[in-house]
Image 1 (cartoon, rainbow, N blue to C red):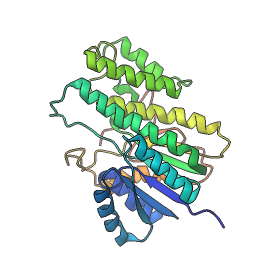
Image 2: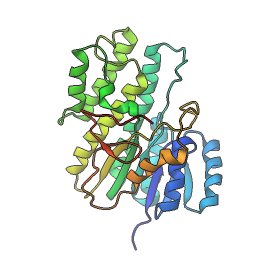
Image 3: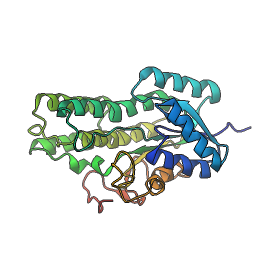
Length: 289
């Protein structure tokens, strides 16, 4: 008998993550795990999803906590032996009016959005089955052209991020460099933009490309990772300013999670919310929603 198919969504209790849960509960032929940092909120979200059918389950997962990640990976391994879909959605963003120093914002945003996502991937990727799909939520902010601090430093940074031989280690080093420059006040002169969320999402988009190269060399066939800008969605994170519903925001994310076997593209790509593949290095960036 074929193994039970399993999908996992991080930060699935609200916003786009909850929208993705609804899509996967409707379309994925297996069990869908809603993971969330807060157990109470996660279980409340599951009660909502039960109205759509029986496939949603809950497990606590805080992507900013190594012990929580290890516990979840161990649970998936012992219970199912592996899994088939990972949606990297959990993230944080400071509001425009935030008063915390830029260095502090940079440190926390990069730690959660980039290093937290990376930690989840490192822990769970060994459990992905052949033909698995990874869908990572980036942002329009995650396009490489947003690395737009002072020149010529910004061009040099973009070149490093887009290098076809960039390694995970080198990418981590770039992210740490930004945090250091943000703390000492020299980020703009070093080529970095004025947004820590931007840098965290550019890092996530660059990571997608690095990960797909590794999957292409993996002995497990046809593992595909992509990332996308879900659109400007009406969520807590956008202070409910976005025009799109969470269902519209979830559409491309879920599409990437459910890509059919042995597709030629997208693979390691950056997509817009309308599912079009965008040139992450050179642009143009489609009109913003």
